Image (cartoon, rainbow, N blue to C red; front, side, top):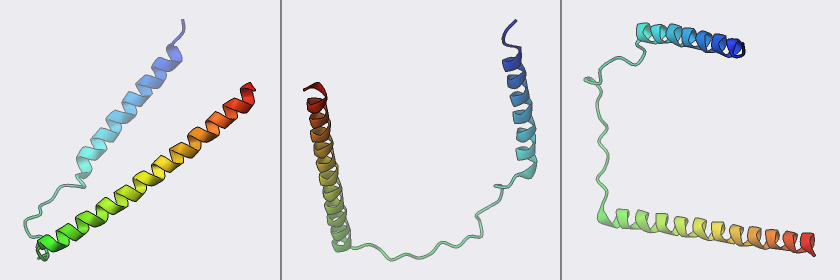
Amino acid sequence: MGGEGSMAAANASLKNNRNQLAKRKDSKALSGSYAHVKMKDLPKASTQSLKKIREQIQRENETARKKVIVGFVFLFIGVMAFLYFLLA
């Protein structure tokens, strides 16, 4: 009958996963407390600086959008030229 090899592989995978789960529970690498961690005092952002940051991000997004549009236009023109020469 077919499928014995795949079932053996599935059983081996389940066994390996079971072994790894046991190791993860024993190590508890991420356990701990943040009770004694001191937070840094960061300066408050003014409305002017927030406005400047917002404008900068909008400019960057606009230039990225223009680059994407130009890229698609060139790609479209290239595909159309390829199809024209292919079918002509």
